[in-house]
Image (cartoon, rainbow over all chains, first blue to last red; front, side, top):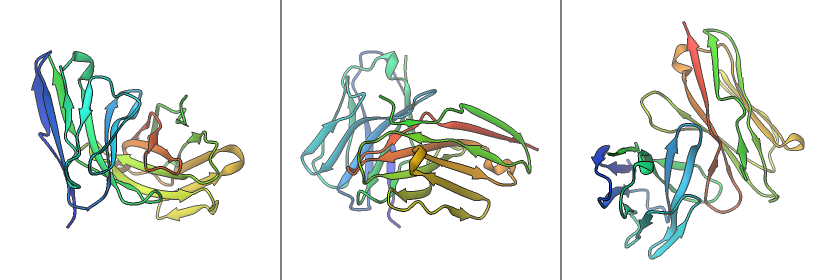
Length: 112
Length: 113
């Protein structure tokens, strides 16, 4: 069965370190997204990609970057982790505009 | 500006009560899509329903029902005869013709036995 997986599921890192969260999907979807979930804010879009070599900023992109070298993967990098980036991160992929998004299991990141 | 508003932060009910979750959205597009997702305590996001802007027909799926009213820009969700397993955070989301989803802040539903 097709799926979307995130790794690691949990991570603790120190302020100032670079961190990369992995996202891998086997749906063969062109469209992939990274969201962060914080209490009171729901899910907010960080970055998204509509295909290989395409990346776009979402509403809360400062301090984050993504790259898309193939269809299956969209890694999210925190350039210099800050305590404000402590959150739960979700990766998602989507086929067409009128279909639902499929989400990974989430990564809980703690920056200390 | 917030595109999706879920005014209820938390709702607590006793088992077998009905519960309605409000969702109000804002868009200028004529073609758009609305979604509901459930996030149980285990943390994953579970897709519940999709509705496009041209289909105002209400939908029922078991104990779940959805009421879409374009006139009030609302897409409300009702759980009938709630059960403890319905305890979760529920998110309403909007897609405006691109592929991105804008989520509301979520409503936490607690069903007490």
